[in-house]
Length: 468
Image 1: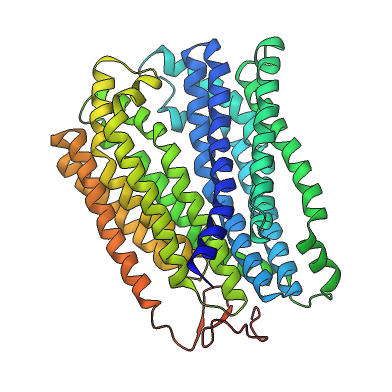
Image 2 (image 1 turned 180 degrees about the horizontal axis):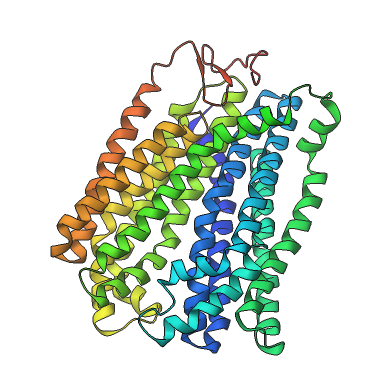
């Protein structure tokens, strides 16, 4: 298969994922915009609650990401029974994980609010006011996490079936409903932060219902449901296979989230203006980093599907991924060099914060270019069973980044950027070594999900390539 075809397919899969990811960020911004009318305490409560929800996303990624890879692999192999098995495994994991998080989170909502806000007293009245508000938000949002988790599984199934546009449309639909309901529940019905949580859950529920309709109508999934005989395998085996596939991807995400939170504490050693600048710049970077993750998902889907068909084209896909991601990374670098002050101004910063943020953004370019290549190329390994090694590289890289950042924090935000770039350069070296090994694969390999990968003749799909 030609390079142009790989590139076309990657772009076709990636751009809807990009807008879906941005839509997820936008949902939090919509809530914050309306809650801001209630005062600083409400803003703080919703902000920390949103961060907790982002961290919990790593839990359900075990089901969502694992299902995506397994469905894509089964689709490439044209194995209807394996598609059904992958779908069942995702829903079994959802049924196991969701009650623990939703019910347990609701029962522990007050201690959780204390934890994320730093105690009952805090450092002032703002922290004290935020505690009951955060608890109120959690009382709605944590039970409603069941909807959020189910939507993630639906998205994973659709993406594995090759449909990345519907998850994008569902995310935009959810945002539209939230945008309409926020003022109604927050201000009109005077429900405050509870209103923001209710609007968010309802918006996601509407999107989830539409997602179920699309699942029922999806041609690939319907054909699998009609053609596959009753499978003798147990539900536990399906769930275990999905968990083994998705757990390393979840660990990778959680490691990066924890590292980002820890880095804030290191930046705080430099000064208040630097912390504010770092926070604003990080949000601005979502525009670029979401594109890197979109390419990663596209590469994962494409790689898994072709391997399922008995075609090992990891190196060809990897070259196109590096071309796309490298171009995006260099574009981000040049944009930051030229427009850093205007970016900070667009996010409402001024004075010392704006100056510190502009300096940080201009120093961040090399890191972003390396990050783009690492994140995007990681999709090839996620789709081919190499995600455990990828997760280990990420965990070591995050630990190294934090150590270097602590050591170089005396140089201010440029020192933080240097630490990030050095740690990412080593991660890129590690993944490049993994990538070079794909040049001479063994005749028959087996990935972590138990799928046999035949690589003897890339252009001749093996009829025996099925889920073990």
